[in-house]
Image (cartoon, rainbow, N blue to C red; front, top):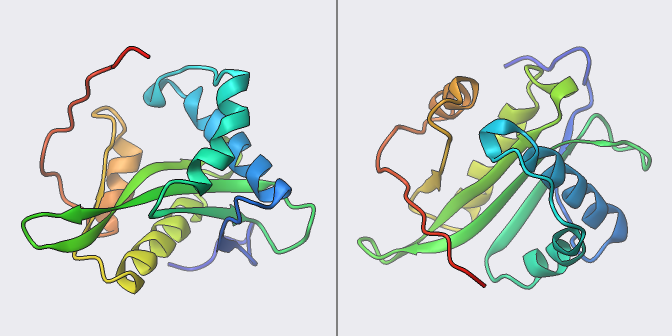
Length: 165
C-alpha cells in the first residue's frame, strides 16, 4: 500500500514504557481509544492513567507500538497497538494477542492502522509465534476490514466476565 501523502515519513516503533514521553503517549492513546463507543465509551480514571505504563512494563510478554507522522521529538502519536504474548496449548508455541489497536480520529484511513498491524505481525513472527489473535467489536466494520486485509479471519467468540475488585 502506498504511503499516504499526509504522512510520508510515518514511523512505527516499539514504545519504551520507562521513557516519560512514550509512557505519556501510550496513556493518551489508550485514553482516547477508551472514549470511543465501540471500545466502551468510558473515561479512564486518573489512577488507571497513572498505573498503566508501569503495569504494561511489568507484564511479561507485553509489547506496545506507537505510530508517529515522523521521527521529530515533538510529534504527537497517531496510533497505538498493545499486545501480549501467550501460549497456544494445542501447539505448545507462543501466540501474540493484539489487545488494543487505536488510531487518532484525524489519522484514520491514512495507513496508520495498517502500519501498526504490519509491526504487530512482524513482532509475532520475530518471537516465533504460531499465530496472532485479536478481539473486535461486532459493529466495527472498518476495523474488521483492516484485520481481514491483514490476514485475520473470524473465528471464536470472545466472552468476558467482570470480576469485582
